[in-house]
Image 1 (cartoon, rainbow, N blue to C red):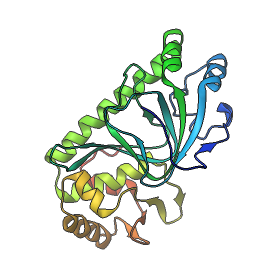
Image 2: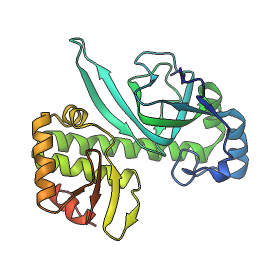
Image 3: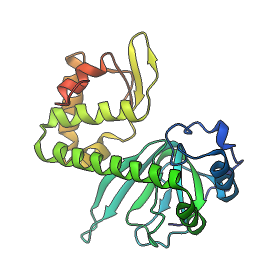
Image 4: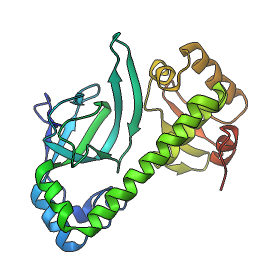
Amino acid sequence: MTLHSTNPEGRKPVIRCAACPIADRAVCSYSTTRELSLLEAIKSYRTYLPGEEIQSTGEAAAHVGSVVEGIVSLSRLMPDGRRQMVGLLFPGDFLGRATRDTAPYDAIAVGQVTLCQFDRRRFEKMLGDSPALNRRLLDMTLDELDAAREWMVLLGRKTAREKIASFIALTARRSRAPVSADGLHIALPLTREAMADYLGLTIETVSRQIGALKRDGLIILTDARHLVIPDLDALSAEAGDDVV
C-alpha cells in the first residue's frame, strides 16, 4: 500500500502521540512510552481529499496506518466493471497489513481523510519487539472479523428496514456521534446511492426506508446527509440488534 496524495497540501504537521485524538483506540493504544517514541520516529501524516484514492488493489504496500479523521471505504472492482464496497474504516481503524506486500482492496476517502501512516517494513520490525503492539493488532483483527460476520448476517438475513437501521446505528456508534438534548447528531458517510450498493438494495428502497424511519420517529432528518437519533437503543432494536 502506497499512501500517496495528489493534494499539494497533503502532508500535515506530525501530532505528538500523547495529543492524538484516537490515542485511546488506535493500534498504538496499548503501547508503552518507549514504544510510542519509536513509533514517533517512523510516522507521518497525510490528508486525502473527498473521493481520492488512498490505495489500489494489488499495489505495493509501502505503508500502513491509522485513520485519524474521516472515513475510508474499502472496495473491489469486479471483472464486469461493477464496484463492490466491502467495508468502512472509521477513526481509530487500521488500514493495511504489516506482513502483506500488496493491498487487498481499493481504499478511497469518503470526505476528507487524515491518516497517521507508518513505514510498513519498520512497523513490521517493531511488531517483533513489541508484545503490546502485537496484542493490540490482534485485538483489532479479531474485532474486524466479528464485524465481518455481523455484516454477513446483515446482508443475508435482515430486512431492508433492518439493514438501513443497522447502518445508521453503526455509523452513530463508530463515529462517536456527539450527544445533545435531542439525541445523537450524525453525518451519513455515504450517499443514498452508495448505501444502496453497500447494503445490496436499490436507491428507491433506501429512500423509502429512511422515510419510514423518519415517520416512526426513530430518526430526524436535518438535511440529505445529516440526521438526529433521539434514542439509539430504540433504533438498534429496530435493526434487530441486541440492546445492552
